[in-house]
Length: 174
Image (cartoon, rainbow, N blue to C red; front, side, top):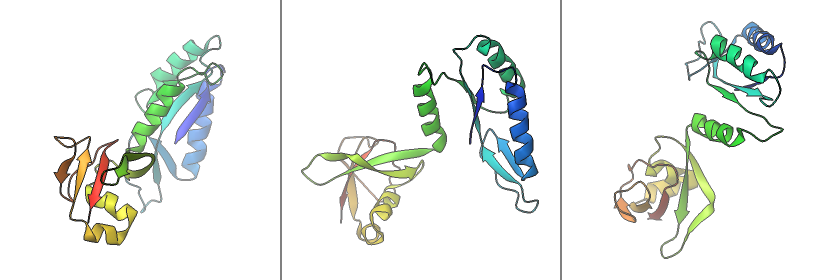
């Protein structure tokens, strides 16, 4: 969850309190890290980041400090200005990081990698997981692959349990 608040408003803390209370009425609790849902008590936990927008407005810095003092220990906090396009790259990077995903690219033997259409996997995925995304038979028939990126040497032959990393290029061999 990305909770966006208006740093230009004196009501910035009230904005957060209203949202937190309404969500808690629905048994949803916002947290800084991934937590198991409490199905017994019907509580659902959602990993959350607070984004303070309009950091280009007077008093925004003062409001951000108050926000950090009250919620900085509970949630990751980022300050941006959508109007001035300030902090947006950092926001994109943080979102990508928080999603805990990797992009893996494929290539055919003797050809260049297809860098336009990655396989998207959870961090911690292995070569066999990438093969399974392509097709279940592909995973079953997989003998080995060559990997560029996370392997010790570019084009290194790896087995199906090889741990993949972001931006790896994989050449599957059946």
